[in-house]
Amino acid sequence: MGNIKEVLISEDKIQNRILELAQAIEKDYDGEILMIGILKGSTLFMADLVRKINKNVHMEFMQVSSYEGAESTGNINIKKDVETELVGKDVLIVEDIIDTGNTLGYLIENLKQRGAKSVEIVTLLSKPARRLKEIECKYIGFEIEDKFVVGFGMDYNQNYRNLPYIGIYDNSEENI
Ligand code: IMP
Ligand code: MG
Image (cartoon, rainbow, N blue to C red):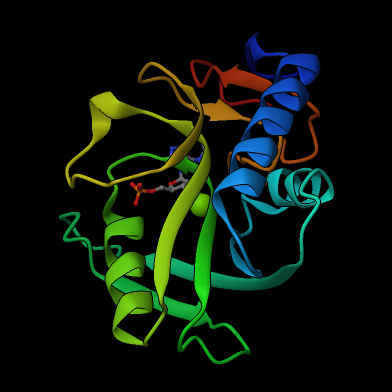
């Protein structure tokens, strides 16, 4: 298993929680939901989530990158944008994990400015201890401690995304 120190959340627990999130979302929305997955980390979560929502769902994707300077300024660059009109839409952003909150803070503002009727967030994980920007997230799968995690879409240098569970990554020895 390379550098996976321990399994933090098992495949079963993830799937059970996704079903609960899907049921809550299904109840809260009347009409169509425009779900925007943030590439690449949210893909596995989104694929399972949409299949459990018994309602008309449209799927779009965005890819963003944080500004990589000496300081984390929260400057975000859109590398891939949605391919549909946002005006009047009920948007649900799908994220793998909220860390500092910089990415989502920017995205929420951006999508609202472009005319979305509502913008909510569903995230599989949240690390509240790391938050720099307060984010109102309506649907959270699991709150976790400040540990670097991989699997179920999340990566370390593009590795481990395909693990069906969430594991704690141990970078004490850099060998995969
Ligand atoms: P934020 O803007 O700091 O909230 O960045 C969140 C993004 O950082 C997530 O969408 C992930 O891509 C990445 N990230 C944050 N924490 C982890 C982690 O523990 N494992 C893998 N990716 C992470
Ligand atoms: Mg991400």
